[in-house]
Image (spheres, rainbow, N blue to C red):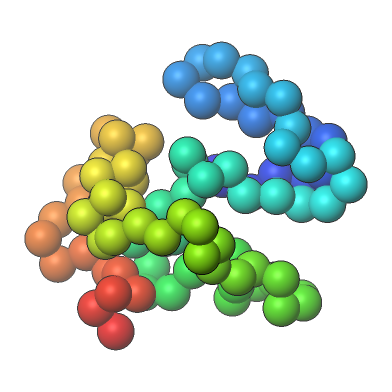
Length: 89
């Protein structure tokens, strides 16, 4: 999971990290795969009731980077060559 409620600490590699935002929901960039490998569209934007899930122009990542992150974060899942991705739509 990469989305957290404001004020909620997040965990990665067994270590608890402080909240990135105290007031509003936030996305941890180091955990976000932009749903590459899982869905053809970012699910945060799909379910968000307001239009606030927008791309960060200062943190643009390529499909290969996002796929590598997905595989690292989910080693128990098989992500084959025909994985879903917004880059392939």
